[in-house]
Length: 164
Image 1: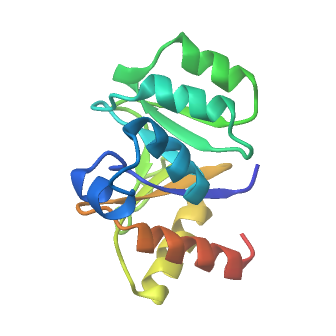
Image 2 (image 1 turned 60 degrees about the vertical axis):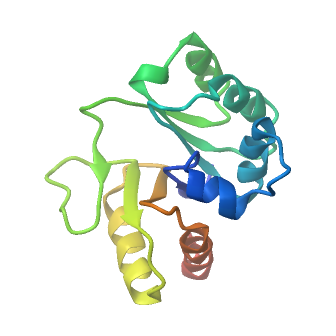
Image 3 (image 1 turned 180 degrees about the vertical axis):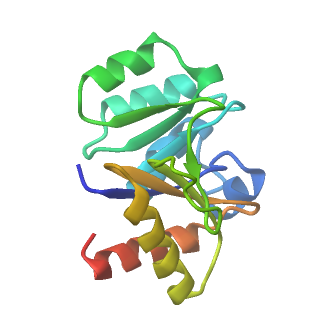
C-alpha cells in the first residue's frame, strides 16, 4: 500500500453531487465513480450508502483507505479489514485527526483534513507536515463546502512530484 491516499470528506454533499457526477448517474454508481478518481473514502455518520460502499470496495482493483465513523461500523467492516487489502480505520471521538496549523500535540494521526486550496506552496507544506507525523499509510481528505475535487487533483500531482 502506498504511503498517502486522497479523498473528499463530504462525498455526499449536494454541491458535489450536482457538480461532479453526471446528473443522470444513479446514486448507487457514485461510489464506484468516485473510487476511479480517489483512493480514500470517508464514511461519515450521515452516510446512507454503507452497503454500496462495501460492495464497491469488495471489487476495487486498488487499495483504498476507508475512514468509517463509529456510528456506521458493523462486522462487515471487520471482515473487509481482515482481508488485508484496504486500510479500514474506525473513527471515534478519540481518533486523532491532523489539521494544518494545529500541531500534532504528541498524537500521530493517519487521517488528515485540509481546506480547499489552489496554492501549490501551501499544499506542499501541508502534505509534508502531514506525512512527517503520519505513522504509516494514511489519508488526507479535502474538507469543506463545496467539496473541491480540484484540490484533490492538485494533491495527487504534488505527491507524485514529491515521489510519495
